[in-house]
Length: 171
Image (cartoon, rainbow, N blue to C red; front, side):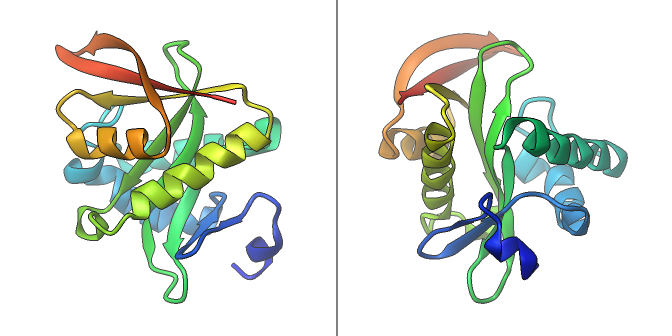
């Protein structure tokens, strides 16, 4: 992990270290993505270990091709894995989207806001003119994070019978 600290793709915030995904993150990602409390509301839902491994390989490749992507979020000092945050191309063609998913046990401390803001700023510095985020209308906590980091409601759509709100940030 020490070499990642010097990567231009690594982000250090006041309390967090955001590291591009690497093979050593697989065990943490498997646990996170298999947890219904975390990935139950995410696009395509919970994942098994095989799918998570394929997504990790895709995330690593995405970084290579695009120069941005998903980060593994760690607490500075302890190195505790808190979850993920970052940017990905939505499979529905809506554009590059900000995503984040943290363990329920660490919510309520502002970590999602801190990681999401860092990812959003990184994306705009990387040249992305428009970044979106999608949140279930009833997910008031995520919607509050998106508003607090300066994203504005832009659109809405139905996904599996649930109303989803599209937020937007323009550079």
